[in-house]
Length: 247
Ligand SMILES: Nc1ncnc2c1ncn2[C@@H]1O[C@H](COP(=O)(O)OP(=O)(O)O)[C@@H](O)[C@H]1O
Ligand SMILES: [Mg+2]
Image 1 (cartoon, rainbow, N blue to C red):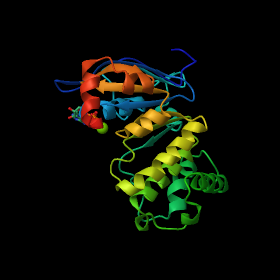
Image 2 (cartoon, rainbow, N blue to C red):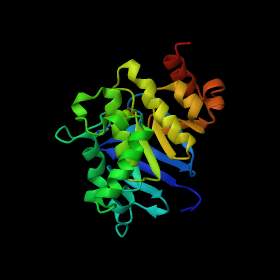
Image 3 (tube, rainbow, N blue to C red):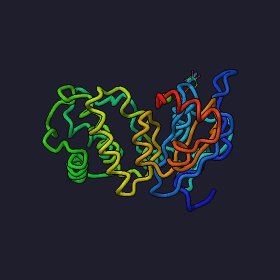
Image 4 (cartoon, protein in one colour):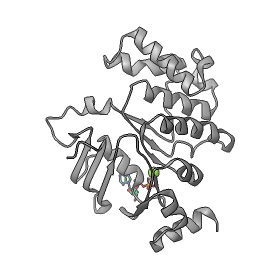
């Protein structure tokens, strides 16, 4: 385990039955680094993200977050998870609570903040995602893009030091995608450590410090956006990019 990394993954293997989905993944993420993960559907990207906060149990290998080995039974996984924000394709806001209540729920319930502190934090992050005026709204009355931005504010309100995004814009109507990506760009600029699974190649090109190409349970190739998008080396990377960039 190396303290200079926020997230360190070593030789991670994960199988479902006889289906080996992750075949030995190594990845180190430095503080404030933005890593975008691209690759075909079924290549293991979501499974990988879920292993990082132990929503999935790896078969072997190591995952360290903030220096804690999350496979170590002595490590309090709930404590570690509080520092990992996760945003999925589907936002799962509670429909019976307003936006503010959705955001303050976890910090208060988990004893991380008093009600007042949580409310202050919620308003701060709603401002960051551009939705201050929606604090009292019911989430079901918001557009998909607005709901996803609330979900991002909800994750941020826990003051995580790593944010994991799993295709946060892929369920949105096209006109909603830009606002969500803008919020993510802002987080990146402000120094948040981020691992982002995305099909938004423009975003990856512009925002990623490093692009990681997943293929068949392996990291086939990784590098700067320039290396991956403009000078891919591996035939699998070239073939994938040809498909998604339609060139
Ligand atoms: N809970 C699960 N049970 C069994 N198989 C799964 C489960 N989750 C994912 N898989 C399988 O793992 C492989 C990788 O899936 P996933 O990580 O979702 O890929 P990606 O996010 O890159 O599309 C697929 O073959 C998928 O069917
Ligand atoms: Mg996926």
